Image (spheres, rainbow, N blue to C red):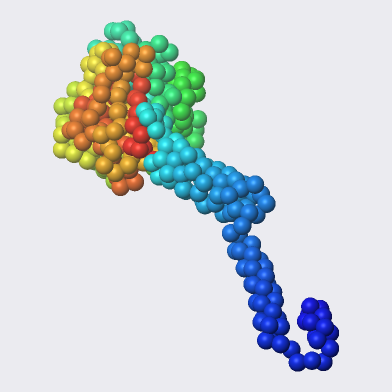
Length: 412
C-alpha cells in the first residue's frame, strides 16, 4: 500500500500512465503469490507432512520409526515389536506368549502335563462274630491261627498289609459288625467304625487291634448301615464295600436265624440296594464253602452282574490274594488333566507308565487303542486308560507320565 501511495504522489494529479498500471499489477501478483505460499506451508505443517521436530521421519510423534505411534517400532499396533499384533512377545498372534500358536500358554516343545487321579473310597466291613475266633481248619483256637487274626494281619500289617501300602491312594474306612452290643443298650448292629479318609492307617490299626470277636452275624443290617455312611461321604467318589465274613447271615430281628433263607435274601437285597445307590460290594468268605450259593448271589447283587467274582478263601495265602485283587483293582484308571487335549492332536501326547528313572523301560500306551488310552468325554480334559493299560497301572509299581508336544495341550 505504501508503494502505491508513493507512485500516486510522484504523479501529483496527473493521469497514470499505462506503464504505471502494469507495475501495480505485477506488485499485486507478487504479494498474492507470497500469501498463497505461506498458506500452503501452514496447511502442510497442520497435516503432519513436514518435520515435526522429534528427530524422526516427519510422522508427528516423538520417536524415529516413521509410524504414527510412540512405541519405537515400524508398525502401528502400539507395542514394542514389529510383528503387527497388539502384544510385545515377538510372534504374530496377540495371545501374549512367545510361541505363535494363538493360545494363551507357553507350552511349546515336550510339556509334562499335570493330572489328578480319582480317589476311590473303600470301606472294610468285617464280620466280628464269635466264629471268627476259629482257625481255618474249623477248630476253636488251637488248630492254627484264627480267622480273625489272619484277616487283621492281611489288612493292617505294617509291612505286608494293603492299608499301609495304599493309604495315600485310597480312602480306607473300617466297620466291624456284630449283634447287639454287650453294654446293655441293645444296639444292633454293634459297629466299631473308622470313617474313610486318606492316610488312615494309624486310626484303623488302633481300633482294629483293640477289638475282638463278639456274637451273631447281622450282615443285612450291617450292609444297610455301611451304605448309609458311604452315601453321606464325599460325592463323586468311587465307593466300595469289601465284606469279610465267615458265616451265613442272621438279622437283628432274628439273631438266631430261625429262617435262614429269609436272612440270606435280606442280605442280598441290602447289597442290591447299595449297588443301586452307586456302591459296589465285593464278598470274601473266610474258611467257609458256599454250599447254598448264597455268597455267589451276594457277589452278583453287589456288582449288578450274573458272574461277579466271589472269593472263597480256605487259607491265609488265598485271603491275601483276594484282598490284593479287590483293593489293587480299586485303583482308578481315570485322570483329570490340567488342560485340554487339542482336537486332532491326540497323537501328540505320550502316555507312559513305569520308573521315570529308567526311561528305556517305560510302557507306552497308544491313543485310541483297545489297550491304550482315550479321552473320557467331550471336555477333552478327562483321560481314561483301558484294557491292558488299565490293568498295568492297577497292578504295577511306578508313575504315570503324560507329555504333549507343542500345541497338543491347551492350558487354560
